[in-house]
Image (cartoon, rainbow, N blue to C red; front, side, top):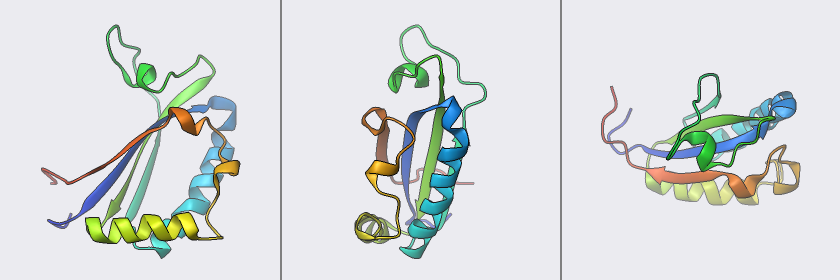
Length: 119
């Protein structure tokens, strides 16, 4: 990973029954993000995500019994490319809009990060 790379991270709960709809949304999103500068998108469907007593990923996104936790990230070459790219994706008519989300986006957690260690 480049030394000036930038990463957007996401944590969300997706209705398990919507797994394929979510996968299709991601495949459509990949095209838009890469068109606007993203290097890589990784979407991970929860497989071993334990419920915590004080904190946990399921608790953080208020995951329900019929939902699965998804952990995802987008790698950008720099913060500057990310800022311009995110703006362009939001304005891209080919990008999926908020009406097309097969999950409750209000419970999604996200943030931007500068890599500390990448090996």
